[in-house]
Length: 572
Image (cartoon, rainbow, N blue to C red; front, side, top):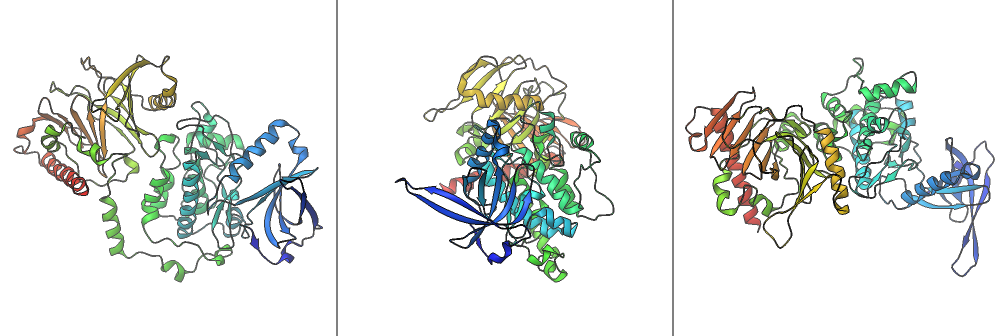
């Protein structure tokens, strides 16, 4: 929306100019709309931005002026029209509002919401660094804008201080969609090398496997670092050195600037070279940095010049008791991916086996954040002949967008997609596509090769290949098992990742590095403690063993699963 303001604010040293928009009505009549071009707001190599006053309505807006001399090449005009197409389709409180565009013989004009308090770039130039409360407030709004963009399959690709505007209410507005792109389908990877040098993500520079939404998350990491430290993390004397530092993820926290451990942890989990292990938008919101205290909706306008007062900051401090309670509640949170109550009931197999099987699945009581669960490598290397000859060697949780990828000990790589379909691929390149029809109980299994498969599987094969390249295992354990094994169900809690394999083996991997591998067929359990010591038990003898850690996990997991199933039954 345009903002009404005193029109005298647009008078500048530069002589005002009248710009006319010719509007053609459906009946062929024309109407002229006149604007007074005012002071310069910003300039780049491609466009100039001025204040525009609509002479008829007295409303102010920002006018982006692009000379047609810069649009002589068809490619240049095509890119600008694509930017307009994307921006005009967006409607979100934290995105600069698109009003209209028109052209005359000399220029093309894009009219946008006027953000009277400039950008975060000017704010940092005045203030040098921001307080952590301010960073929390701005970050929450930026994430809101990005969740909206990503839900519409749009990647911004140029999130930086200069593209984050502040309204008269001190509300963040994300703008400039000149580098934005839209994915045609889930799993598509873009390969254009673009971005601002200090903010560009390493996967864009490498350009081997393409890039996706995660480049915006990298930019958030750079942005938070810059707001808290005062300079970008990879800044160097020349662009070549900056790019080298980005590729090596070479940065540090200066000792002369004090920031909290929580903020350092958040930054370090965003500035990671592998996009698959970067925090998601939801995980940023759930991070301890964002949850340690109440966050104001807006920051006072006085902070444009000076830091917030101590009395203002004190309003948002959390007492030690309240902070302890918040952490306790956070540790109890659990996640089930995209599981339904029926999926949960069938997690451990058919109904007749469910009650006995849930007693064989356990959970630990060690604390850890959701981010550190994202990737896990199995410590199981030697398993005695107990029927548990294949296990999950390595996995990555990317269920916020696509699903869970994994590698088994026999070298097979698979994906459990969010729509509950599955792919398991042998090192030879042959794979199984597994799904279930609505009117059937059993899985439908189809076999293909990676160089010959139905076109409709293209998106999923692209994701499979991406997971395979990332989830490389050095040591493959010969299993002697001829059947193809794959993950049928998975369950994530705050402390563990639990997999049920198609051979009725359940593998639980805990945050403290301990693991359980249980065979329903052989009635055995392999337990590896956090130090790597491995022991094998008969299920019926676990309760009588002297292994307190094992018994404790067994009891805890049995109770948790039972409570979850009972809660689902009560809701029916």
